[in-house]
Length: 394
Image (cartoon, rainbow, N blue to C red; front, side, top):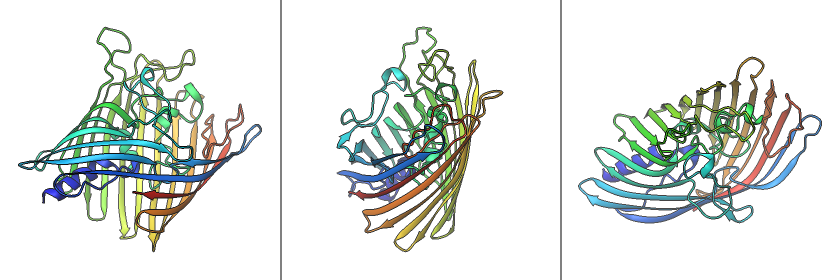
């Protein structure tokens, strides 16, 4: 019974789309090393004058490459201590270390591949059979988690759902359409305090507080990097669903270094659901909204329909979605995307995969995929991308 409750807590906390391992250390107490290596050949192209095709060997096109360490100690009386350290890897070039911000703001941001860090997760927890889990450290923000959990492409490669990167990157048009500054805690955040409830009757919940750690000196940015999230959901039989509501503060930090770039708090919500039509076919749908306040308000709207179909040793993935930003008259860029993929499992730990996607931009959007370069000044281009890769889990 105790092992099953710990496994449920880990399942609820891991988040399938962010590809954190769902296994717990063996036995009531234990330590394990885990990871995944994923490398693919990726090509991307875009239409229009000045656009360019790019072909490269890439990492994490099927699942995020990573290296992790975790441990679990039985403290007795239904109480456990847990730690989890997980680093981003780039096996295509041998580097390590993902992008992170120590204070959830641009001032604390570092670049990817500069050396091993635990940008994916670095937490310590107390887990109770009866009361749930208290978790401290760097982890996935429930705002992005709730969207990614219903993305069959696992937040990776050319097929990634538009609603995942869009709040910080906009639609490829720079400061005008970005909703949050780079380094803000949309996908993952530092200085997080989580409470995760036990799963009761299929229902679960999570409350999260994110700290920007600025001094309270009356400055415009004193609350920047702070955030709050509430996530509730249900998993039972063939159905699962989750609702998230959250805030991220960026009152004093513009979305880019471009002069005059806007700033403002963001409120977001998302609703996702999945239904196993049969034991081998799951259909998923997601809707969400990211709304920035301040002097230059803007609203991002996301809709996505997706699914996966297990066929023998393989799995077919598909996704159709849109992300649109309403930023006032004459500023309503939109990108729509269609993606299709196939995974063939050579074993329980090794798989070959391929995926292809196409994005159509309109009204000023400039979203590209597969590393494609869109020509300067183009406002209605299309972009296509293809991944062909292999991954191995250990």
